[in-house]
Length: 311
Image (cartoon, rainbow, N blue to C red):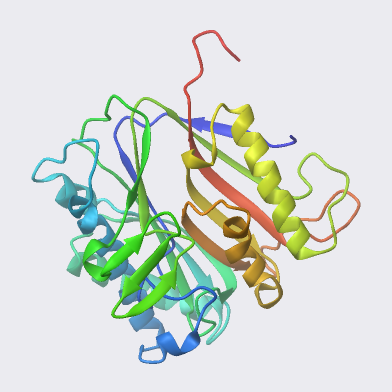
C-alpha cells in the first residue's frame, strides 16, 4: 500500500486523547460559531482551558466502564506525568508570540492542575482551528496508566466526559446536552489495553500511487479506502483505530468533507481525533506527479501481535 508502519507494544494501558480546544467538548458538527461566543479568546485563557480539558478527561476515566482495574492512586500518578503536544496557530499575534505564551502559561497551569511533571513533547505551527477560527491552540495529551494491569483482552475502550451530557446514542454518536443534540465525530479519549500492538502510520490519497484526485473530497474518500486496506493487511478493522490526526490544507474548503465523510459512509464509530490546518512552514506533501495533497492521516490503531518468527 506504500505505507510504512511502526509497531509499539505498551506495557500498561494507555489513554489517548482527542485534541483539546478552548470550547465545550460536546458541540455541533458541522460547527456553529455562536456556541463559542461566550468564551475568552486571549491566548492565556485558551491555554488554561485546553489543559483543564485534558485534566478533566483523565479524571473522568473512573466514570467509565473499564476492562482493567484502577487502584486508588493510578489517576493521580498518571496525571502528574502527562505527555502533551501543542498545535499553535500562526494567527492572532503570530506563531512565535503564541508559542511563548503557551510555554509560559503551561508551566504554571500544569502545576495548578496536578500535572506538575508533565512533558511537552513538541509545539507545532498550524493555521486555522477546525472548531472555531478564533481558537489559537489545540492540545493533545496521552497518559500511561502505570500500575494498572494491561488486561487479558485487547480492547480500545471509549472514554466519555459522562458528567457533561444528558444522554448519548452511541450508534449514531449524537449527544444530548441541555436540550440540544450534537453529532460528535470524535470522543474525548480511548483507553487502549490488552495483549496487542499499536500500529503507527501515516497515509494520503497518493500512498502507493503516482497521482491523486484533484478534488479534496475525493482525496478524503480515497484516504479512507486506503486506511481500511492497511488495517485489513494488519489483521485489524476500523474498530481498532484509537487515534486519528487529520492534516488538512485549506480548512475552509475541506472542513465538511473531513468531518462528515466517514459517517456518511457508515463509519460512525467516533475516534480520538484532531483536525489541523497545515501551515506554510509544515505543508502536506505532493503526489509524485505534483498533485497537491489536501489531507494526510496520522493513525494509531490497535492490531494483533505478530506471531513469533513472522516478519
